[in-house]
Length: 417
Figure (cartoon, rainbow, N blue to C red):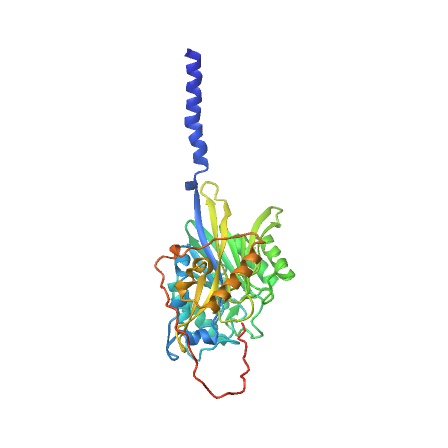
């Protein structure tokens, strides 16, 4: 080989060695910080749920089993956020619909399941009056939660809103609002955030001034039981993105609504990519209306370039979950939130499901998947193996009712939201 050819080969080899490695380094994941978040829908507390959790009447309750099948998923997230759609008055009587008052143990179970944050601005914020607002905040903070949306007084709101959370090299601003409180007025000095555009625009301006890596707004809005978002929801979402939101998570309709990407011109003319989940449905409840027996867990990652500090929305997925009422005996029932995919195709037996529950879960799964396949996110299918060592339930013995005298049929009252 000639000297010129050897020299050319040397130059090519050197170029590939130095610049090839440099090119690879530029795309290295080590240059990015990552924050994994998971959001769930409405945590409700109807009367049958309270009764099922009761250990000692009006004194001791245990909700931990309710979340044992989703706990392994929740614990993997850096931040896990839920909407607490009950009040925690701290003393009986505990009640379901129409004015929700649940035992403190419900919040404790959510904390033990791995949740880090509870938002409390929703249409049931004022169900237990001023003391209910205050005790709810005190309780969730005592359990170590981040909390926002309702406040013990205005001074507290001015000091701690928007809520700023530092995690994994990220600084995140969280805001939370509701459309109303079922005509129950907020009693001073407490404060509940409403979907008031003037208020939200000022709050968003303050959030931008705090220079967070991302702004996340959790909204309680929309029309109940509607599978598509309303014009009003769209209008509010567009304004929130215009004012600087990166992600909007919606609650309240009690059914699953679309997940959509949006591209909005901000006030400085810069185009912004945002993502909105209009409704995650119910996380746990006793609602019986069509499509209310479940919801979505929504996973999303935030990525931060360590050199430029630019933050982008990363991968996102949804996990359909279903409310399963396990009837251990005539008197004993347990409410479970279960990830659908892990307990399908023969795995229903792991939960001791009877044919009625199998068909109900199958119907919810089909409706939800057919609906969500049209929109801008995909399902992440959980396997039973991924859940690890979760309890296996025995199939209950068939309960044969004793013969009783015929009575006039009772009118069944539908538990609402």
